[in-house]
Length: 215
Image (tube, rainbow, N blue to C red; front, side):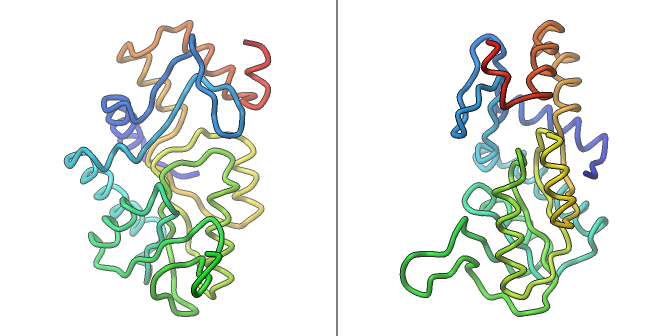
């Protein structure tokens, strides 16, 4: 999982500033999966802050081209990454498509929405990586449509071991603007959290599926 240190720190700070990432070790959130978590991330909030969304767009555009080469198409993962994916495609002067979690039940029953030709090189834009399972469904759909997936670029990753394993199995290179380690380092340095709370957040990251049982 590739990232640039300066970009990672700056991105983490911006996400904390606008509450796209909330840290609350004393009163954990409950994820849709049922996991208890001291962190909650909603990167869609970025779209409401022009200066920050432009920063994310520019960093994506720069690092995507550097890491993967300029693709033929940018694909966004529905729904969280449609907005930022369109901004990246616009910045790079490229066509844009988006990928649904599953095919529509009516009409043309598309899973990939937009104009995509077989053999085109595609980079996928995602907002958040947790286990990687839902993100990799987009890879499968694009490959099934005949695309050559060059890699995926995400705003933030929790850095779970299972995610690294899943991306490795799927043979997908992942680029992230920031990650959990950089977030915690910055959160302590900027006093968003105490060192004691940092320890709690590190413990959760080691075993997120069972952490809630201990609380």
